[in-house]
Each structure stands twice: as C-alpha cells, then as structure tokens.
Length: 112
Image (spheres, rainbow, N blue to C red):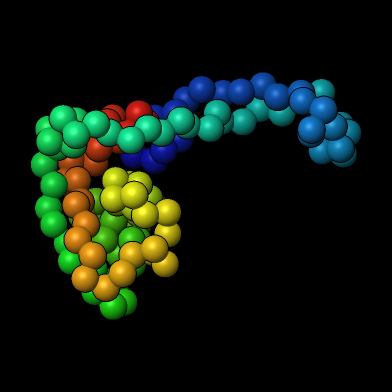
C-alpha cells in the first residue's frame, strides 16, 4: 500500500511555472499525482488509535522503525509526522515516540 495507491487524484498542469519543461518535452500539459494535504490528528482521534511506545536510542532511524512495525520502510514519515518530528535530527536520545500500530487507521486520521 503506497501513498500513491491512496491518492489517485491526477492533476493536469499547464502552469507557466513549467513552461520550460513543457517546451522541452513538446507537450501542452503535465499529468502528475496531486500533493496530499495532511493534517494533525485531534486528541480524541489519537486516543482512538492503538499505539506502542518507543524510547529513541542512539542509532535509531525512522525507516527502521517503519520496517519493524509496518514491514515497509517507505512509511517512516508516518511515525515522524505522528510525533511532530520533521527529521531524525530533531529527535533526541531518550525521547518517547508513540507509534501507531494500525497503519491504515493512522493514514486515515492523517487525511491520507
């Protein structure tokens, strides 16, 4: 289940911003997947999702946690977003993370 599987909105783009690319490709418009708009779950939505705790230790990586809990490293960003960390650099040794156990539920709550 990739992000693109859930976001099937195809955008047709002929913006002047892409004029050089359009000219180079000899096309009048580009087709691409729309950018998803994520939101922060409310306290009650978070309470409805089963999570497990993880204490961040030296050497941890979001992609390793995603592999461990979801079987797919591509969902590292779910753990990061859920906990409000834009990157691993923002996480300190000893920080507590909540890891949503049901990936489909977490994606739904995040608006994906």
